[in-house]
Image 1 (cartoon, helix red, strand yellow):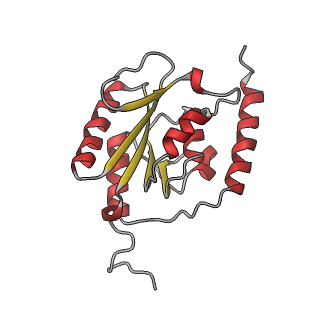
Image 2 (cartoon, one colour; image 1 turned 120 degrees about the horizontal axis):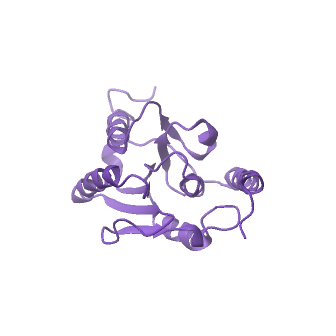
Length: 181
């Protein structure tokens, strides 16, 4: 039996708030050229958008960046042979937060950049992002989840636009032209 959302969601938010306050992870912006490992969070709702995203992520992998992809699905994963580590409702706790095995597999490697390219209503991806140890966590703008991310973009229609924004803005951070004073 699953508890109603009006009980689960506040409990999850309280748990994540306490976890984030207790966290001692140093997060900072980094230049796109110095990003060596990327974690991307996806969902199985829009398979066309997911296919384009996977193509783009594979170009990052061919540029000698390490790319890990974690996906949430309610049913059968649409792409099982693309290196996506899928999890579903069976791997969520009673609050809807991914269980320890999913979080451990996300945080087992040092990740420079976490990108949430999933649907804005997919709560397990937001929760997973909040519990990530990535140096910087990026997503489209979601007002409810401001504390779960370090950098957010407004007016992003799809994952391709999100990746374009990320490359554009991160390539302009900490360069000689824009050096800190």
